[in-house]
Amino acid sequence: MNLEEKILRISRVKYGENPFIEDRIKKEMEVIREKASEDEIDFLLFLKENLDQNILIENLPFFSFYLLGLSLINPLPAHYYNENTKELIFVNEVEYGVDLEKKDGFSRDGFNIDFSYIFENKIYFEIQIDKKYEDRVRFWILEYYDYGPGYLWCIYKGMEKCGLYFTHFIYLDKLNLLYYEKNIYQDIDIEDFKDYLFGYYLNEKIELKNVYPRKVTESLENFAYKENIKTYGDFLYLFGLTLTYTRAYSLFIDFANRNYPSNREEIFAYYLDHGLDRERAAKLACDISFSEASNLPEINPEIDDYLKKITHTWDKTSLVKVTLYSYLDYKINALI
Image (cartoon, rainbow, N blue to C red; front, side, top):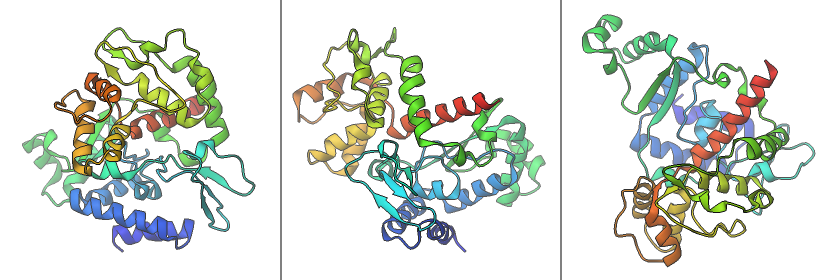
């Protein structure tokens, strides 16, 4: 059974034969085959089975990875799901599963991450590994790919050579506790997650100001921003702005209309909505995010001026990941 067949089989057990789900999986697999390596994903699944830690692809919210247990982020649009009947109900009027009302017999999910921007970028897999497993992982790589007498070959070539082409391993002395938590998916409770974000995180962890570089949210001084945060989408918008840095600038942020892009995907969507092709829109979003853009298209003077002043902004996947990981870390530590 190849990787795509394996993922489709998992999806059918969970969702039945759902055309939307299967089309998403097939599109993701096409991108992986074109830009990365199925074989490296198979190796990550091998690590998942043989290391006493979770293996999580940090940077790519592919639905396929979610099904394989390699990601905690379900990137589908907001939806209800009935585990017994396999019924899946998408709700177009709501951005995120977090904001759906309770529905008897159904769980809520979906962080609504559009694959359009992701597919236009380089594909690689960023994995955190407990440093105590470093030698073991490097040796397994050599064995898995039949490089020869493993450890001795690795020493001869230098440890840094013992890696994979599309996989970036980050070996850390200490990982977040969620990496050692079995069945981590079961620890995610939507109501509890909302309470954590709108209570503790919004009041204790959101940082609006910075000395240098300047945060976009510097302009929120004396503004009752908390009253404007009513949904997870509002929260994510504010969070994105707190991690968007600009040269000296003053602007009015309209939370109701979200008038300024707050992450790379929103910059990508801005250009896409105004007629640019996907490749150019993605390149502009990336270049703007790292203060490398020049000669931006003239569309909306106010927004264009804002984009010219950005020195750095995050991608949406990273924003979602931070909120989810922070919640799980808080919850796990509370149980210790």
